[in-house]
Length: 592
Image (cartoon, rainbow, N blue to C red; front, side, top):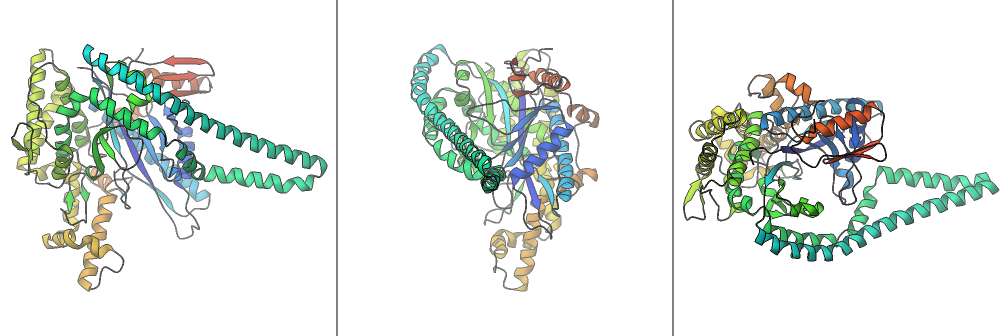
């Protein structure tokens, strides 16, 4: 597929640092509500359209992006802000919308801090764009690519009966779960109405007798609004029967869908952390510095991921939540393997090179794409090898380093593009040039990439903070020990503990969105390359891409807001008023 849409979903950590006068700190959910209120005052938007299975609090924005609350049912009050870019056709357009996302979240945080101060809080909210917090929780920077994944006639004849049989089992279970949830909601509503009715009867007889009941109802309503996690956690148990079904669906879909990509793209994804990793400091006895943050949390190759710790490289939930997509030849490829980048060069290369490799795999041009014997183990090995010298085992019996594997992909993409015979798009030529330059510098002069790659920039900052190699080796061996309470017994231990906390703080502070962030300071000092232009980013704040369905969706949202209409939005549809719908089924069609 020469033309495709691509995008990135970024989960932002919202960190509240309490002040001295704070008796309590607001929950993440309470902070999100303040963020959404601020958002609605700045940006034209519509709420997410109703969905039985995938409902999330949030909004679709006039520029085609989304803004919503991401949380598990078990920890509903401890969620994150997630923003997804609109559908873009090339990585240079995408980078403008990524920059616009970061700027918007930063401005909203400033407004929320002002509101918190007025509400009596003395602490401040900060925003982190990374993948691991100080307590070891992970959050993602997910990529989506529109791909060609057709099934042969024989494969369709095999999968359709199995698919029908599986849904014949699944639908009654889903109906039961949804029915129980609706019954609980109805029962709660009847209970509340009955209490209100009793209160009104008491008030009619003796008004003072009804006041305690009304106050109790009001307290319970306030409690539910402030702490809905007490309910969502219990309701989540009712959804438990769905999870075994999802595992069965995963088994079926892995047999038939995305097979070519899992076979030929995986080695590329494993080794591209050589330039797309955001860097990580670790005190677990292994290397002190790692290329990327995400690899330790990826424990399976492909599956439907409803939550938990078993995160896959390829997430296949669309085949479950959009069942009709199994009958189509084009669908979304959803990747969870990437780090959240701040360096624009790394981000463009991460998405642009991936799009080119996908084009190569989809083509009919013959090329021996590398295939790793154990990709998950290889991912951990590459991540722990900043020198990029370790050899990985391939299925053809050969061994190759991460850079050698990347060069095979680069050569394959060039072969495919050369054989198409059509003029090369400007963005593709630019990505090819930068890809080659990056691989060359990683091999011969990696420090020259400190202005372009996050992990190299962060490592340079770490070495400035801890310049002595002996100290870095001591941190590698004993960092975790001295950071534990009571772990520093001598003055040397206390000095090492101070270095460890400084290294950890540097690791986290690099990703802060705002003037105190490590990356921001590098940018203000002119130490990193910027690829997005300020005028283009300013347009991206309000104008969607004009060559994908994001344009049609964004215009519909603007029209609704201009005409003071209620409504709701999803990726493929917008409701205007109560009964008027606009549909956008083709991601490549702007409907202009």
